[in-house]
Image (cartoon, rainbow, N blue to C red; front, side, top):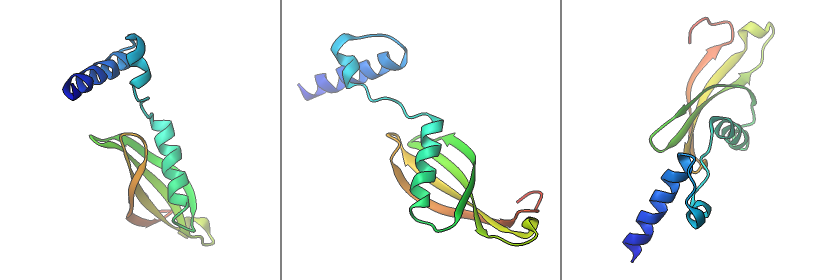
Length: 115
């Protein structure tokens, strides 16, 4: 019986993604998280851990397990602004859009052409 249930739910999710309707099974389908929601969630979650100002989202990519969002953060503001120190953080989200981990992947001066 549990095997039957798993198969029916899997089929319902596939049908919902394809735009089809399968009656009661549609209510069991988990809505897919899109890139916009992943980026917003990543920024909100990251801001709760760091005290620095988030500048922008520079990348959002789908992974096997969910999403990876790259966020640029102003770590050390300086005058002139081109000498400010920024960092890029990656935030990993699971398939349901829940944050799992974050890490700083690089630091650079704002005026740097390629970091």
